[in-house]
Every structure is written in structure tokens, then in C-alpha cells.
Amino acid sequence: MSKTKGFPGNIIATLALAFLVSAAVAQAPSPTLLVLAKSDNTVAIVDPATLQVLARVPAGPDPHEIIASDDGKLAFISNYGGLDSALNTISVVDLVARKALPPINLGALRSTHGLAFAGGKLYFTAETNKVIGRYDPATQRVDWILGTGQDRTHMIAVSNNLDQIVTSNVNSGTISIIDQVSSPTGGFGPPPGGGGSGPPPGAAPRPPSPRLTWEVTNIPAGRGVEGFDVSPDGKEIWAANARDSTVTIIDVATKKATQTFPITVKGANRLKFTPDGKQVLISGLGARSGDTSLVVLDASTHKEVKQLNLGGGAAGILIPPNGSRAYVAVSTADKIVVVDLKTLEAVGQIDAGKQPDGLAWAIAK
Image (cartoon, rainbow, N blue to C red; front, side, top):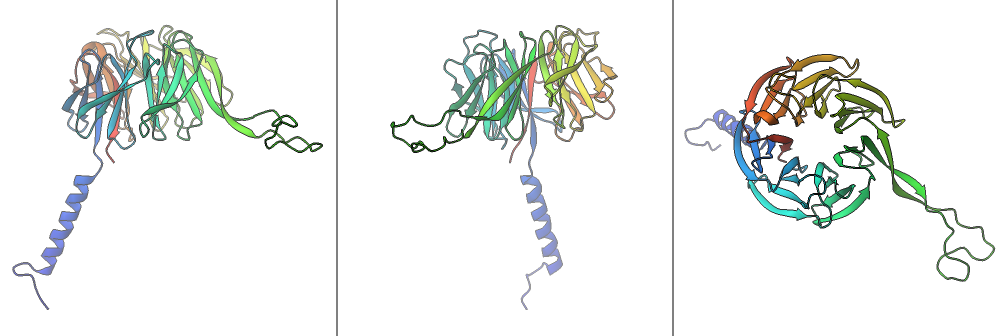
């Protein structure tokens, strides 16, 4: 039996195992935090473990919201500009090469804001046009548009099975629930003698075949409704009303508001459930240095659990899938504050640029 000179078999096996383990660790998905700095027109790519900025990449004009593709290779950024803006692009960033790619030109669709990535496609709002749209990265074209009929359709969420979309409509003070439903086509085919595949003379007309369409239900919330989230169990929508300092809870099944109650943050901007559905975080963009920047509520009792003063007005909130932390964009103080969701204490800070707002989580696959 041959032996490898100088290395007993058990040592070779140990070294081989160590190599495989180290290779697996090196190739394991590494999440990154993406932070938009609106006044710098950049996106910061941040290591969430060390809180260090790894790179800064141009984000296009007036970047507001950001989302990563499912494979973590691309980031999409809405170039907003405000209602009736001339901006009609969505910026694209290559997260692997850490460089800006040519933006998506949306033609007549302007003032894009809210973003969601689902089913391999990018969903967006276009405020000027009062619509939501869908962009297919594979074909590089917008393949679907739907009007809401509401003023300032702002934020958007898409269900995992793609059959329900929710938007907030700031100036209309409403939440839209948009459901894909089955509807009969109506009609009985071509008229007699007109050819085609209609039933023969004297035969019973064919029943209408169903087709899929979209049904929009607009539900009153409060003045300036903007940030919202769907509960993890899909049963409720909680919407923050910025001009009223209130939260409206909507029952998804009945599509009706069940309760509106006051909150202690000024200019409620974003609202997020923790992944376990037990708590709700709401940021206040109207907060000053001595005010409450973030409030934590108990989702079952709707009672306040804690107020946090983070040093200024806060906007974007991101909670990673493991639910251990929350990253909060304190826009007026030019920082991201890291909040431990077990202790509900601030435990870190990221300096990611001027006027941070939109946040996203990217996992390379």
C-alpha cells in the first residue's frame, strides 16, 4: 500500500476537511446593507457585521427608495424628483462589481418612488401618472401597467404569490388593495354567419370563459398616509398617517379599516412589522433632536412599548430576516442607527452619507 511521504492518512483527511469547511464558509451568502444618501445621490454598500461602508456608488438624481434583486446581484433605485417631476428613470447598480449601470428609461412614466421585487420582476409606483408598473429585467422592458386613480401613489408591496398588491396614496389619504381575480369574459363568440369558432346554428351558446383581471379597492386611512406594512400572517395592513400622527389598521379580508389610533411620533414616515409579527416600529421624520424618532408598539394590544430618541427625524426602517436588529435612517442627523430588537436600545451607528433614507438588504446567491 502506498503512503504519501511525510503526511499520515489521518492528517491528510483532517486537512482536506478543513479546506472544504473554509471553502464553504468563503462561498456562504454574505448579506449587505444598502443605504441611499439623498443629498449625496449615492448608495452606500455596508457590511452589517462591522458597520463599515465597503463602497459608494452613484445612485442617479434624487434617489428615494432601493430594492435588491432576489439573487443579490443588482440594486434598483427610484429617481423621484417629487410629484409631476420630469424624472423618468430607475437607476441600476451592479452589486458584484460595485458600479452603476445604465438606468432604466421609463418613457412617459415619471416620479417613480416605491419599489418591490417579486417573481423575478421589479414593481414600482409612478406618482405623476397615478399608476403602478412592472419591469422585467430579462427582457429589459415594462411589461405591465395599472392605474390606481389615486393621488401620489407612493409605496408598494407585492404578495409572495403575486396575486395581491398594496399601495399607499399620500394625497388621497387611502390604501389601495389590488387583487387579481377571475372574471367572465362575457359574450357568446362571433355572430352567426361570421365564421370563426362560434357554436353551430341552434346550439346552446358557449358559457363565458374566465379570465384574470385586477380589482382595485381604495380604503380611507388618514391624511398623508405613506409608510405601511402588511402583517407577516397577511391578515392586517398597518398604515402610518404622517399629517395626523395616527395609525390606521385595515382588515385584509373585509378590506375595511377597523381602527385608527394616535401615536407619539411627529410626521410618521415608515412602519415595519418585526418578522415574528409581535411588534411594530414607526419612524417620525418630523422629530427634532429632543423628540421621539422611533416608537415601538405591541402588535396585539396596540400599546406603546418604547420610545427612542435617535437624535433627529427618522425615515427608512429595515429589519433583516432574522429579526435581531433594526436599521433606522435618521435623515436629519445624517446617520443610520442600529437598534437591538431584544433590548430596544441603540447599539451602533453608520455614517453612510447625507440625508439617508431608503434601505435594502441584499444577499448574494
